[in-house]
Length: 183
Image (cartoon, rainbow, N blue to C red; front, side, top):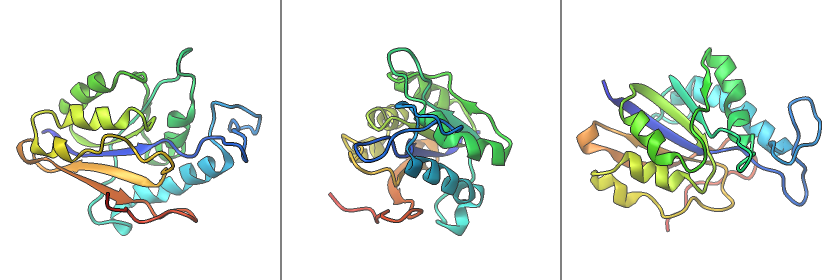
């Protein structure tokens, strides 16, 4: 059975000029989530544990994927974003794919079944979505870029393989989260 839903999110908030990154033990780390990012990661637990309570279009993930940290792309944020959810759902975060491996991840997902949630760098999400939708009319609906300052969106791909649909949904989990804007 093919993948029923592909949910794509940008990793949670990163450090910025006003907020440093921190490891789970509280020590400073520029490659970790900011405090706001840790808050979002925590808020994602009930959101994806019972997703239809928030949005009927969503499904509970059975597979979790995050971008692997490497020497050239040392961000820990994708894995950190999904860690608490993985614990709550009794799943493992698969971080075998690195940044720039989006096409390979898409090929893997095309062979998977269930519902996959991917937390990734926003730069790679359009390529991942287009690669997964390759040959589908829905590929043309994928934006050329993830909105630079948005950590509060979900890109959803659902429907049978030959009739895949692409949509953008708001999370609306944290203060300041917004609805999806057209254009």
